[in-house]
Amino acid sequence: MTKPRINIHISREAERLLDKAAGPGVTKTSLVDAAIKQLLAPKDDKSETAALVRRLDRMTRQMERLADDGAAQTETLALYVLYYLCITPPLPENSRAGAEALGRQRFEHFIGQVGDRLMGKERYVDSLLAHMGLEETSAPKATTPLEAVQ
Image (tube, rainbow, N blue to C red; front, side, top):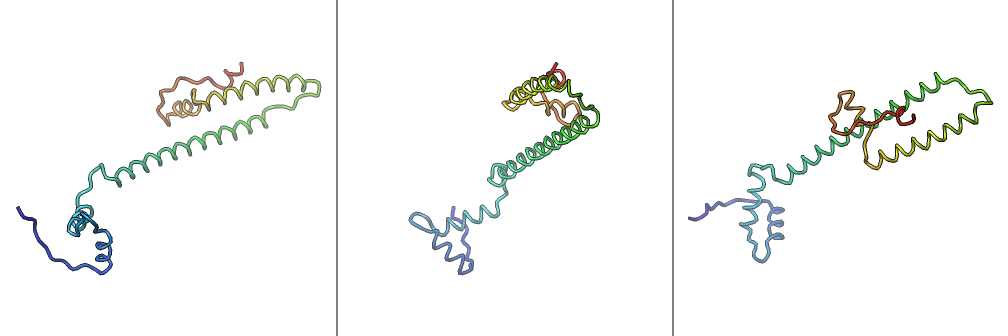
């Protein structure tokens, strides 16, 4: 069976590109045929463009999750600072040394908990968002900061 034959007129620029691309073992016919197929053939899901779109979608979801995490952390910190500054009375001079020692001990425990969570053991934000119904999680139930200190 013979291939259909067509006569076409192309621009000078297209002709220069064809001349550049055509080399040993490559014909202008095969180049034009491949270009037409790539341009006009229906795209399947395995194409590079579809793969790129899927990757961009995944990256968008990851960025949205990071934004949600950042917003939750910012709000948590802001509410804690507000609560601490509004509710906690100043300590008398004679109680400050003991309170500072206990505070340093609790802070060391807190830093250890943060380090564990950053090393990937579990994320309190995941369990918090799951509790609020904003995210599904299969992570084990995290302890609250108050439970960890006591």
